Amino acid sequence: MPDDDSPDTNDESTSRRDVLKATSAMTAAGAMGALAGCTGGDGGDGGGDGGDGGSDGGGGDGGDGGATPTEGDGGDGGGSETVQISYLSAEAAENSLTTPQFEKSIGRFEDQQGNVSVKLQTASYGDIKQQISSRVSGGNPPTLGEFGSAGLELWENGDVPDHGPFVEASEHYPDAWSAASKSTADFRGSYWCGGPMRHSVSNLGIRPKMYSAAGVSDPFEELSTWSGFWEATTAVAEEFPDAFAYEKTGVYNDLEDYWGEARTGHTEGQDPWIRGDPTDPDLQIGANPRTDGMIEHTLALAQEFSSPESASRGDEEIPSLMLTDKVASFTYMTQNFTRWYQTKDDAVIGWDGGDGDVMLLPNPMLDDAGGLASELNDRGYGYVSRLGEAGSGAHGGHVWALEQAQGLFAGHSQAQQEAGWALNTFFHRDEQHVLEEYGETYPSIPADSDMQQVLLDELGDDLPQNFAQVLDNLGEYGSQYNNTGAPWDVRGTDQIRWTDINETISQAIAGQIQGSNLVSEVQSRVETTLSEQNQ
Image 1 (cartoon, rainbow, N blue to C red):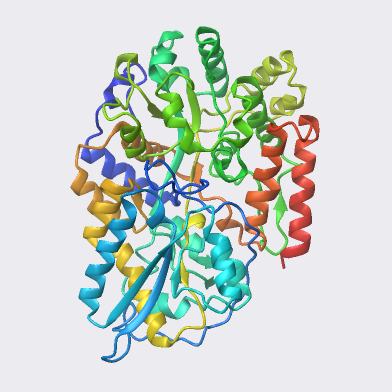
Image 2 (image 1 turned 90 degrees about the vertical axis):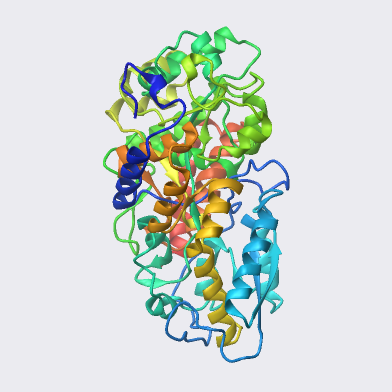
């Protein structure tokens, strides 16, 4: 992090020593998660951050699928005959570069194995769950697939094997996984997946040119709290009346930015939504003024500053809007820098003396809750008054892990499952794939802790400001950057995250639910899901 009086110090790069220090800290804190939830890859702009679109996964004890792995990470596929497997991936369809990257890596995997043939199949993040559901019901599941948290329901139904034997036979896992990956792969003491391959983090993103024109000179200080952000963003709105000073990515499967905002009302990594025994969870919604106030706060942000289209706005649309002075800020900026360069090849990422194109900052923290609530009440947002009870919070953001979990499917032979596990391990562990995919093609943070080191050693001091700042934020604020849903260990996780929380807030942003009823509506829907699905 730069000094408070020197926001320019992190404009171009962060030293390797500082980056590695941050990475070590975030891994130890369990802050890492997986990639974001977008409506899907468009095959061209590299702008999507992934996601699973929000179906209603459950969870469970699962069947064993009839496969027991041999020693190691998948063995040789069993004998000299060629083992044919299929791999269904959304990441490989994310942009025009990821598909050929995966095809090239799979070719090297086949050469290394000698007797395994892999058929790569792709689907957008908006379509992959439906495709998996159709294929499972039709008796034709892939061998290995990116099933996200919907895999919990498949596991409960016996469509996904117990991954425990594969993990326990591995020379790498679970030790090599980041803490968030471990939390994802483990459900109440059992392994239901092979973890995500990469992580991504959402934070506040701003258009420096617009904020500096509105009087901001030190973004790290002046935008460090929600009250400061509201004051500065109001000034931006006045300076640029034809722009949207803050744009909410409000479509329900791109509302994960709210998950990061919600944590800023809390401290010490406290979960804003569900705590305690997963079989009898302690629901915070409707009972905790910090949680309730931040639900209303995200609606107030959208109503105050965002466009009428915000309820259906995806994060892929933001780069072109921001780089043409149509949007000044949003809270879905990740470490992915290619999306900005592909929109504007000479984009300046960083403050750059107030003349930068885009910049990533920590999410503002809740500071003077009473003052903020009073200000919003004066503007007609009476339903955020409960923030006055909350006290101060801390910086926070969202780290994805559960959304991109991938694993094996039942109904395949032992040799095929072993080959599928070997492919999963290859994507996690192969240095060439990690460096090319996450250092160039699809900038992300490898999910395996030691692979993070490999990537950082390669990138050195060449990290763009948004990637370097994500690492600094994770290192400094640790547990405030949590994975949403996986630590709950409740059944109905997908339903709660995507539908009960995100879709309900999205409906309020669209005007379909009154703001004064929003918290009680979210509470009621979550309680119903826990009652119907959690055991």
